[in-house]
Image 1 (cartoon, rainbow, N blue to C red):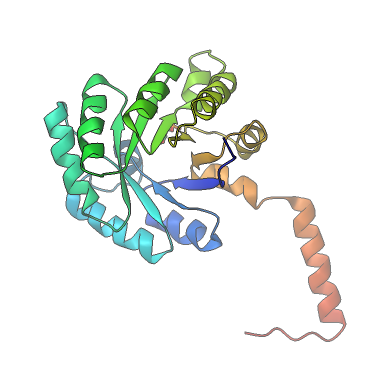
Image 2 (cartoon, rainbow, N blue to C red):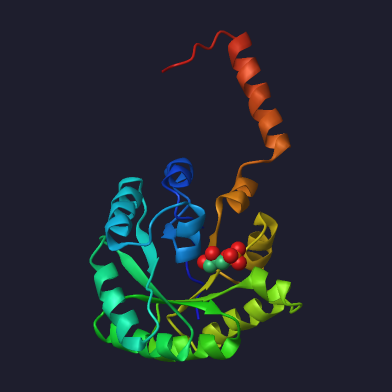
Length: 228
Ligand code: G3P
């Protein structure tokens, strides 16, 4: 399977973080979930998610992942149908539970893009690929927290999707460092979601800052005037 273009998502439900990071243009979109809404102090309501969707697309997001809530398959499907209408390009997230898989089948049957989330094993990735999920999201950091080798498991999941030539993208989540994103990209992973703290790793190289400062000093010394 030919390599797919890299796709990065900002894992945050905080528009203030979106305002900082989305204008960089490196993020394909944003991913959210009820825990991220709680951390951002934002209500988990259709009204608020609609407002967040508007904001995300105004800031240049090309896709927003919104997580459905509910206990039963019917509840997840009903919620997913509401979510998909809130913004131009919504992927509906459902957990990789039995109810979530059944809901994914029905939502995909209605041409709704689905992200299978809370993935902890390769079998769930296989199920998501068999269903035709757009994404399957393994929680690398949480796998490590459980004493498992999250990196090895995620790389194996990626190989599984490539070997089966599946259109499902492995959206690696629960990432704790920028170096881990780079390492996984080296190993062939191509789709990631991570929070603002990890994104800092893209822009915090002290040597680059020093070099940029030297350019600015030389320009000023040679008469350059700042152009507003
Ligand atoms: O998208 C899922 C992700 O937000 C989970 O990350 O850091 O809570 O394990 P974390």
